[in-house]
Amino acid sequence: MSVEFGKQLVVAETSIPGLLVVDMPVHGDSRGWFKENWQRQKMTDAGLPDFGPVQNNISFNDAVGTTRGIHAEPWDKFVSVATGRIFGAWVDLRDGPTFGTVFTTEIDPSRAVFVPRGVGNSYQTLEPDTAYTYLVNDHWSPDAAYAFLNLADPTANIPWPIPLAEAEISDKDKQHPALADAAPVAPRKILILGSNGQLGRALRAEYGDAPHVEYASRAELDVTSPDLDSARRWRDYGTIINAAAYTAVDTAETPEGRAAAWSANAAAPAALARIATRYGITLVHVSSDYVYDGTSETPYREDAAFSPLGVYGQSKAAGDLAVATTPRHYIIRTSWVIGDGNNFVRTMASLAQRGINPNVVKDQTGRLTFTADIARGIRHLLENEAEYGTYNLTGDGPAQTWADIAKNVYRLTGHDPSRVTGVSTTEYFSSVVGPIAQRPHNSTLDLSKILATDFIPQDSAISLAEWLVHQRGGDF
Image (cartoon, rainbow, N blue to C red; front, side, top):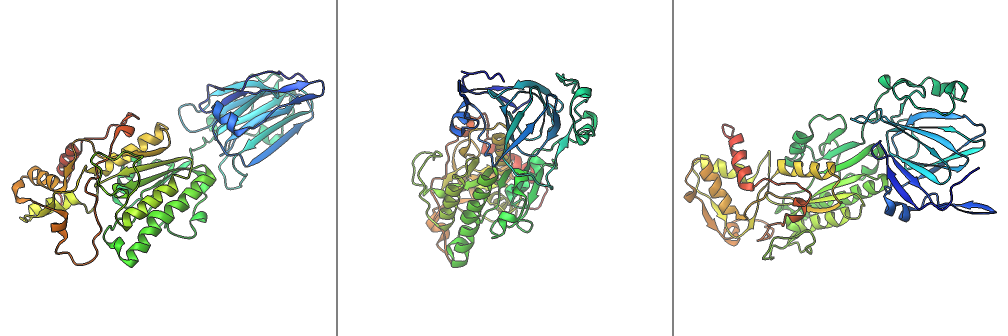
């Protein structure tokens, strides 16, 4: 058996997206040879994904011409040869524009191939006593979705070195369908939690009825349930977008509210982070400006130290810290959210329409964030595979006070903005009976990081005008 010694560890792309060829260092002498078949740090540094293998399989083949495949499974594989040599053929069976793309190469112990989920894998032995080995990042399951392709498919037109009529092929592999009849492998699913909330409804509008997107309200999947670990077949999901949260800021200051806030905003994200880590899922979690005390004289950057003033902010900060422990995460920090449901803008428009002249807080500063912008930003980060981490995402434009925004609502709905009176936070809550949470006075978030990903949040003043036009004629 010939083995090429002295290669450098090099990872190269192929014509199939995500399928990578790895040249591997093999060290040999008169006694034989040695190689590191999987070395996580070196290989991820070289460009392989950190795919988290959980099982190692070996297929030993006695004769030259043994041919197996073409099989596509719902997990990633790292295939290599321990002894012998093979001709490998891979066909993209994932649903999408590269469906049917073929790549072939020979593999000896000095070469390996990373095969992403949904790419059909096959090989033909070129030497006797060939040991074909593969690492996988999931366990076989009878409930998983598999795809197959006939080895002799004329569309794929794989140039087998040994004609298939002379090869050793199982009867089962001979019965696989042609490419025209092969069932594509769907992408791993996106699960959107809290789908009936303001942001959840915006995410429904953003993703629509895509077959790989699943929506769950609290009634359908309670993120605070102790049975969350077994609530879904989590290995089928690639992304979880957590739009579920406890947002009753003042009620969170009561004994019952405190428990509910910590359960939904801290314990539940921690449970989701554990699930995401175990199954290699990307976790998207929505955070809040309330993790800060609002004393900064400049907009808050993503790396600003937490200093929450009340229970709601404390529970959100704890959730952020938990989510940050999972390798694939996006924490979306936002503020002053407006969407389809009860919100400040709807309230002000209703007051204007009913002839009421409100007192509105003038010493809290920030930017409105419309849920459509948040949904669009989340999708942008995911589809562009932005670097994992925390991103501020609010409307753009000058920071304003609540009183400024209320006056704009009055003006845009054809009412006199002078009917709005600005008051301090202390004055506003002076007559309220019951617990009142402290509010940050500065909720303005720095947008430099998300702008660097080429996402452009809309100016919040423009969003406000468009939102009111959209609602006009409706019932505020």
